[in-house]
Length: 352
Image 1: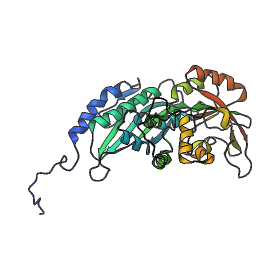
Image 2: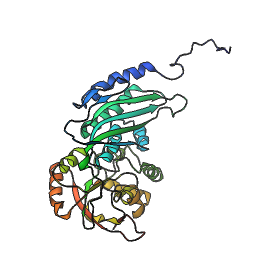
Image 3: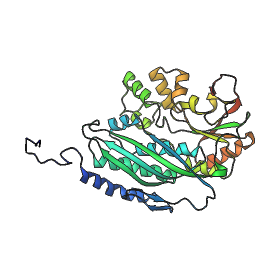
């Protein structure tokens, strides 16, 4: 039988996995997770699985699920040593996705993977995840932390997660009722959100910009890094409140693919979106990215949200009411375009 020639006593810890650190992390995050719990949660953090009931007010509940990550935005968080907001991004990308079907997010689970667990860093990340869940009104009911010694970049981590929500079957939003002439309402983003960061990082490299310094006329008192790390806006609570008062025919979360690839995703094939680029103020950080990277307009619209993180389609006579209610809920919302008939082989979205 082969033997350990050195005589060293081997363990999981010497192999690079610290079970005790994982246990400390679980204890650290329990208080944050508890603050997100909903009445439907029967058992959450600490078990092999979490138990949650469907809310009893739903007569024909339909579950809606979405999953995503944070992408290479994590590279900026790591470079700046700032880990308190990327968890909000993680939650936002999934809960905003299921919101477009009209779903109320019920719960969220995350997956955190690293080469060697830094409990302090992981705690900050999960605190952000809990904060995002609180913004979305969903419960953080569990997750998984994995150490991959020798198989992952030392000092780095990656994140993934998923959300499950519920919608009344008769109130699920699928875009089938959208017709030419309907109005497109845009909700302001907080910045690039969690998309386009491979291009952003290339722009930073090419321009030599310092992430730790403000940019005059762009970031105010914040550093450039702080502006770019601004977490993804979570639209759940104001939009769900709106759905209780006004018929929304369709929605789109503006993520990877930007305005051009996302605005029409819920449309019937015979229709397209015409968006008026002058209808909302573009955050200065996008102007800086375009100048610093010499990025053409079509590429900006195909990669970034350019200041609009969520779009809603409503009948023309409901626009003013929708804008008023969203404004009252603290959202900056704009009439940004309309629905048109789509020409054969024409684009799904026209930004002009």
